[in-house]
Image (cartoon, rainbow, N blue to C red; front, side, top):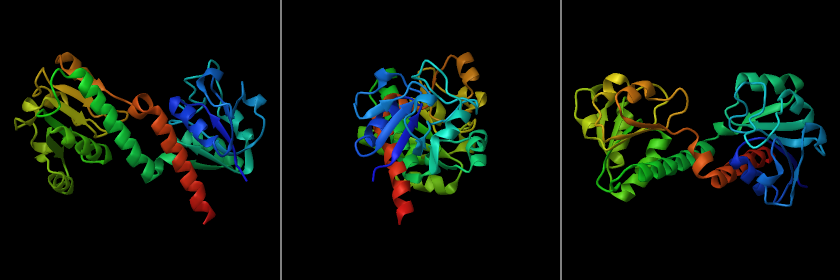
Length: 291
């Protein structure tokens, strides 16, 4: 028996997610204008009051809200409050969302509604990292006047995004250096065939000065003004860290550096693939619960 889904708001990832789920499930949406969807299997509701049923699964965006009160609806001319969505879920239903804040969770939990953060799932964060890495490469290819092959690339951090970047950049023949604090991260960088530099030693080395491209993946400020002063004016710096970011953007501007804070790349450069990833993750969660 098919489940009833309500897809509430979001960017193009959630348009793709709705179309993916609609192949096998009942899907209606709210928080979208009608021209976003190409599938005729999706019911597009103008507002919450016109939704045709209560959902077994209510899917919120990534992130669900920027203020903890209203739904994130970039493709909708109106607004949707999160509180009015509490009446749209069956008693035994589930609310799925990404990077769910305590404020958002507190809207649904007191009503006895289960809330699940799909972005805490490893399979999604790994695939999201790959999509982020591909988007970062796209920016580098568009912004740099030279080939990636042979370019000296510094990556700060050695998490999922960094590992995905290494995999892609190795194929282009880039000269990659990983800067990290942990000895274990530097060891993994060696396993991946990269040069290594301890983060604490960057200021006293030529690594920053020689870099053609720097990708930061660390979600706190590691590229300080003191370190940015060491960078070449020809260097392209791409910060891939989520807020508050890993680079002093104001300092980069004052120093005349080419710096880009590339937030939410999967939703911009690969929305269809990213939407399908989220749909698959939700299906995985539900499948595991049946066991």
